[in-house]
Image (cartoon, rainbow, N blue to C red; front, side, top):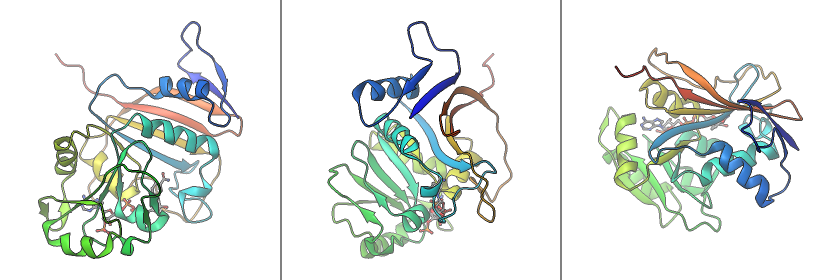
Length: 250
Ligand SMILES: NC(=O)c1ccc[n+]([C@@H]2O[C@H](COP(=O)([O-])OP(=O)(O)OC[C@H]3O[C@@H](n4cnc5c(N)ncnc54)[C@H](OP(=O)(O)O)[C@@H]3O)[C@@H](O)[C@H]2O)c1
């Protein structure tokens, strides 16, 4: 598969078009450079949508929106992160394998992790954190299914953890390069709290009707992002990096 760098123009000596097939180290390094960030503390959201902004494809999960190349980019973004943050709804809907190169943090209000059927450690030895209200600790213990998961009780308001408290809990553990992989409720709350530094958005060239939107929020909010990078593959999918536009400090 080929990736074309549409924006910005490549630096002198850098490729405009790169063939990314298999796991060859040269493509991996090229992608690592494309997705590196300069700071050591940030929150990225990495998600995929359809052309009309649906969060799932025809199979009812993000699998049918994704592709080998999208998963490759996801792996590179994970490699550049200390922790993958995900809502419990995504774990229940899609299942989750603990990443090979980053810790996993799951946020839940109910404490229901589907009796561990959806959370798999596979061969990863990376830590798994379950962030939940104090009142949900017992339910998490009964349902997490991964014996080495570390349960992190966080102060809540009516069962909800504030986005700032979620990030603070991760920072306290030295996990400062954070990528949230959704789903729409958790990611929507992070955007509503204006805590997201970057959106990595893959767009699959399909229209999917009757599904949910990429982001959901109980509260109205808007914020501006500017395009930092745009890659295009030979199937017509795009991979964008959008940076939070912060007002210039005076
Ligand atoms: N396209 C993509 O990139 C992508 C990525 C991920 C998921 N998805 C899709 O998204 C759908 C799942 O959506 P979803 O909204 O259920 O996913 P979600 O945002 O992953 O999960 C929502 C759940 O996370 C927990 N949660 C979120 N914010 C919280 C907070 N502030 N405090 C405490 N708990 C909090 C709650 O768990 P409890 O219910 O346990 O209390 C809440 O019900 C699935 O169809 C999946 O396929 C798509």
